[in-house]
Image (cartoon, helix red, strand yellow):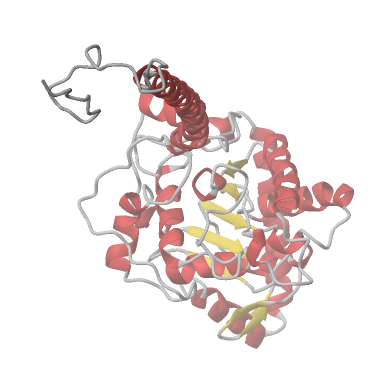
Length: 404
């Protein structure tokens, strides 16, 4: 009988039935050692995966908190600043912006559509005619709002251009821009480029018959309202301690010349400091705030003066001019001047309220009227000696009777 030998590769033999090696040593099983290595490798990979997952969770939570904080801080504060009363819907088209601040838009669109345009790009309260709780909420959310008796509040109904028919507008190049580009159709304008508080007696107001001073322009005719926009050219020229006295002196002189007129004093509008030309760094918003505080104080001191707070609509919410509202940082584009006109139409003192205020100061009115009559008689006496001068003065007044 033949002796059959064991062959290691015989597929019919199990591991247990295989005989020992010829050397006599039992055959070592390698499967156990390989299994242990695989288990250790799997455990290591599982631990790394757990760590990576934990890191991802931490990063997601941390980054999410940062993004949430930034979003709620910046966007939330912007929403609060931009919250305002809805402007009155006039049903007209928006005023188109003009690249030239002195280029007047069509009067048929600019004055009627500014209410709708005011809701675009403007911070603070809207310039529509909303009233009641809606207006109160807008004021409380506007950082430029001022709660003082002399500050003109928004009325429930807007006036039209006829309200300005017997009004005179006095001011510098900003007021000239308002005349040219706001769409206003009525009113008398006494304006001059570079006009400052010290220039009221200087003959720098151009008329068809020559130059006159602001004080001359206020003589010989009685107005119902005076709108004054000064101060932009005073930002760099004054030692501040002297400005309040000079400015109040101007307002008192206006009252003597126009004792029955209400005087609206416009705030100095903010500037865009990034666009101010080199050498004019005094045109900055810190100086604007300083001069406005003096103007506001003058309105508090003089019962016939009221403060028009234009920065309610022209502030970006952070004490700066609205971005891209001006080409040079000072003079506004036409669509913003149209919004200023809408603001004036919605912010005014009623005739009844001013009549009551006038009645409370009878001595002041009597003294101012007497002074006015004396100055008028002196003027008539001087003009009587020179008939030609008298005719020229009358022609000058006629040229100022409307928008130039």
